[in-house]
Length: 172
Image (cartoon, rainbow, N blue to C red; front, side, top):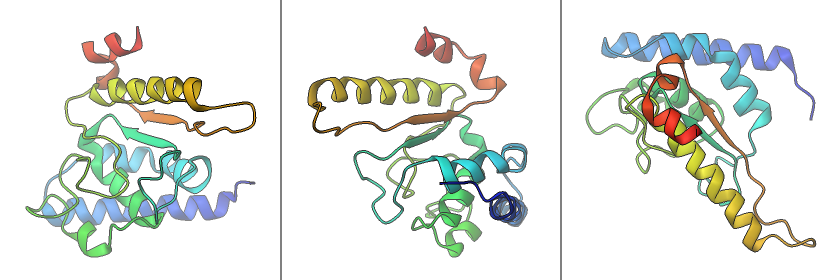
């Protein structure tokens, strides 16, 4: 599948707009990650990740972990734009009690969120664990005739995540 740079650039602009509006509306949140990484989200959700918004728990989907959970509006914008059940009303309810768009991603609350993240570096450890479990499952269940497990795990981590001990321990 080829990249359509114009479509991805437009999607990145839309994701930035969603983040700006949602964070401004609640007067709380972090803009740096959603604005600075919009193109990364466009390539991941618009091209690279193998996922199905209609089946967010499909077992062989690629997993995306946002290690810097404080930048959660990045993730919510891309889940919304790529078709997950994250409606505009929930984007507008960002960081409000009872919404599915809390200040940090929470597994089981928002469709498409693969891991609860909050403390910096935690997502790196979670991603390493998911990747290792996928490799172990592939070693047990894949055969030359049938590839059952071949998903990828992608973690977006910032400098603060890398400086935490949990990241070093998981990466060792």
